[in-house]
Image (cartoon, rainbow over all chains, first blue to last red; front, side, top):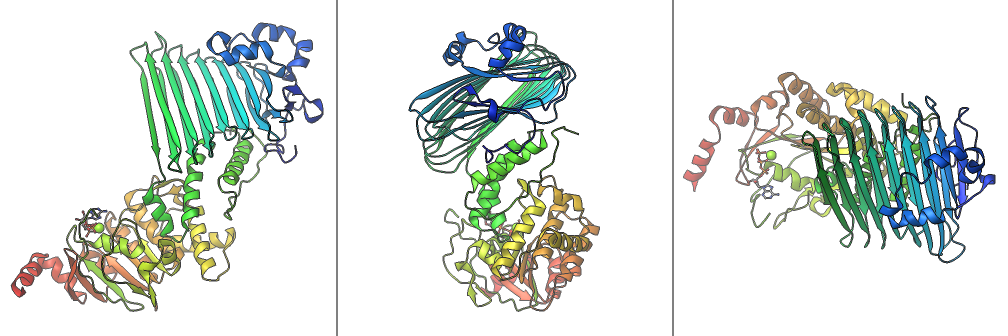
Length: 375
Length: 242
Ligand SMILES: Nc1ncnc2c1ncn2[C@@H]1O[C@H](COP(=O)(O)OP(=O)(O)OP(=O)(O)O)[C@@H](O)[C@H]1O
Ligand SMILES: [Mg+2]
């Protein structure tokens, strides 16, 4: 586990193996007093009231069969409760390992994140796998943010090429909050990530930020619903895809502006870099607007690396493959740069860079810094 | 390009340490000449050769040309979002040094070099913290090209309209910078529309390019004559001769 990405970052961490909590690999209690980071199993003993009130109340099984399955079968997961005004400095990590020890084993996990008014913190959900067996992951996270919450939620999906990964994040966000939901999809044969955010309070800003990096016969599918339920809310979706081999990417972004949600500002961008002739991408914006004073924009691009940029780099002496990698890295960097927590961002940068150029000799220097706090 | 012949008759010899100016009307093929020299893709070279320091230049990839000491200052420098200027230039310099059997510069050594060269161009150091050419003004882009030239220290520099878009003070600063990069064994091919630049960067030879041909060559006084009389008289003389 020590070589696992993010392993060196300090802070609380809960590790689950095939959907079961592993206390020996976990670490809790590093955050401020009053903050709860616990497995659901433990939380049922200590915080039954919170779970009773919130768990399975937001993600709707009726709208998604995988969520319905999850409702019925989840074995464990995490409760994170950050009371009003609390700040957690280091990212809280939830690590879900699919052991791959048995063909076809499925893990159903459930997480509940409760952010009190004015709280600030970062949560990482890291999904990874071992072995060659086919595995199935079905994860559902419910996030409820009160007002003026500043938080980043980052899902890093890096399961094996024999994995089928289904996940959903359902976020209910309150007034004047700034919430960033990141999704990095690198692994799995097939992955599908549903994000539903409900923007329930004025002055709130939500960023959905994602990167999918696929090759071989991978399929990475993102399905987003951003629901502007109140006036004066802003949502920005930025998804970049880098596709090789015969892999496929799907971006489906639905923006729903409820009646009365005036002054909605919704922006959606999906950019794709196809690095092979056989890679494909389906990008589908879908706007449903029931208010008249709103600003909604969407744009999608699918293309190769710009030849004039490649030529410029080469004309200065950089070899073609280095020039290409620099541009690919820059393309991924647009997404990585939106992660607010600096140590996490640097770790991601290093990771993605390694992944993009396994065999390269260029070095970039991520400088480890210690704190997650933005300014 | 789609069957269009752009360059049809270029014969040019540039000796070590010489500065040659190329002038000519819009669309006459000046940038195409620069692009072909630097190795941009998309041009079919149907005839002719380019010898550079004993090598067949056209046989080399763009990066090989750069490592052999060729530099192109672009007429329109390319913006590269997400690629940090300093990182880019350091990688490029070290790539070139590596191929010449020189030790790569570490961060400190490179920084020292940058500080020295940036003064030459009076360029704002903050620009180097940004992505390559992104958010640079037109003039800053041009200065940045010459700054890169100063760092890479080429044997043959091709400057494509480096003067366009520069204000009068910037023109002086940039020309002085270019002049400081002159030296024995270092040649420059300066493409421009204006005699003004050649007051600062004084060429040994001036060539007139029209419709893809070098139709006249002379000393620096040819530039003055062009400034005075335009290009029409050359066309007329050519017609008469034909
Ligand atoms: N890639 C291309 N495809 C088609 N035509 C081209 C291409 N590049 C250049 N040309 C044409 O070749 C001719 C010469 O262009 P070039 O850019 O070399 O001119 P120039 O002398 O640099 O002009 P200017 O003074 O305006 O910069 C023009 O007619 C131009 O349209
Ligand atoms: Mg030109």
